[in-house]
Structure formats: C-alpha cells, structure tokens
Image (tube, rainbow, N blue to C red):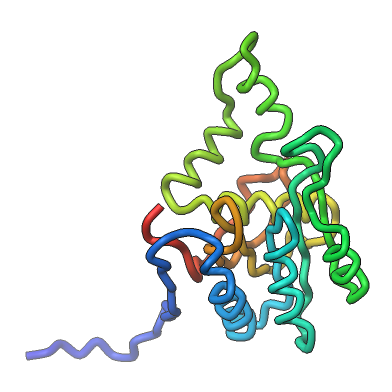
Length: 205
C-alpha cells in the first residue's frame, strides 16, 4: 500500500546539460546557441565571453546583434604571449566597441604575479591561486577556469555586479567549449563566487 504523503512541494528543476565529445574551437557555434538559449530561459541579460584573438568574440557579437542581451568580452592581458603585444584583432575590437559592447583586458587573477614566481628558475614552486586554476581545469574543464577568471576580472573593473547572475563562456586553448551560469564576485571575495549551472562542457579533456 502506497503511503499518503500529502502535498509534495517540488524543490528542484530540470535543465539540459550539453556534453561535447571533445574540446576545441569546433564547438564555438554550438556554445553561442546554447548560451543564448540559457540566457533566455533564465532571464539573464549579460553574457561574458573569453576571447584571445577576437574570433570567438566576433561569433557572439554577430549572433547577438539583434538581441536584447549585453555582451562583455574579456581578453588576454597585454604581454601574455609577447611583451607589449595585445593579441586581440584591432579591427574586430573596433566593430565590437562600435556596437556598445565592452572589451575588458585585465590581469589574470588566477595567475598574474604568481606566475612570475612559479616560472622563475630562481624561485620556482607553485602557488595557491595556480592550485585553484589547476583544480578547476582537472575536476571540471579548462573552459570553466577561464569563465570564472573572466567574471572575476570584469567584476573587479566594475562592469559586472556581484548581485545577480551572468552567462559565462570559456574554452580550451581557442574557441568556446564551456558555458555556465555564474554569480559574480570580486577577486578579494573569491569564495563568494558561485557556479550555479553548467550548461555545456567537453566530456573528454
């Protein structure tokens, strides 16, 4: 006999998670679609997208051209690959800025100064921030680490509010292959940041 449990209050929701078979830029187009889809499902108005050369940024920019969604692009810091060089394409930057979207370039908060010590033959050794980075890469996906870092950078520069949520997009080396929902925080309050939903990620890394 089935017991009478009375009224059941649902305390959960069901949402899709997409798994790419492999990481890489070939997933960018799908990430654009999935990010927009989740933004509209949740009512989130801001997409934060990592882009090195500008190609990924351009894909999102053009897809969002007729939408109500706000696009925030976060790039590699100047000098990331070569001293004094910004890797982002200037022509793409002009097109994106002309539309009112923002491009943010800031120190990588999960490495930054720490990388100078860990890469130095004189000092060497790891750091706590780099341990956080490596944990995110290994436990979930490289793109999640990238997405979190981009949200921290944009929040520190006052572009994002720590109140509310954003759709954040990152990738592995190039392109986009990870989409998530994040409640932002400033770097100095890192443990207030919350990854609330994984929308898409590569299954094999």
